[in-house]
Length: 131
Image (cartoon, rainbow, N blue to C red; front, top):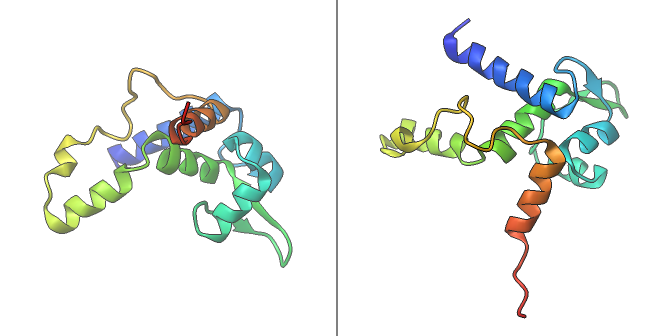
């Protein structure tokens, strides 16, 4: 396994441990939504638009593995712009990649649990009042 593969696995483990789920255990939509700090309907919308991966178990049954929940944290909460910035630098030769921090290094705030991250995003994205 490459060095970056090991680091990504460590990041997944860190996220799972910090949020109380197991990487290789399947979870229902209700439980996955709880770990992510989302309403189950919001999780369903994200699934239908390709925002989170899942495993279809049958015609009417699906589940989310812990590593899929951790992937959602990585791509949407911890570093949402990393994927697009890296893609652009590979295709266009942009200097953006050099300015990006490595995905496995933690900032001064560290990894936060899903509910805290969700609340932080809500405060950031809330429309300011006209008071």
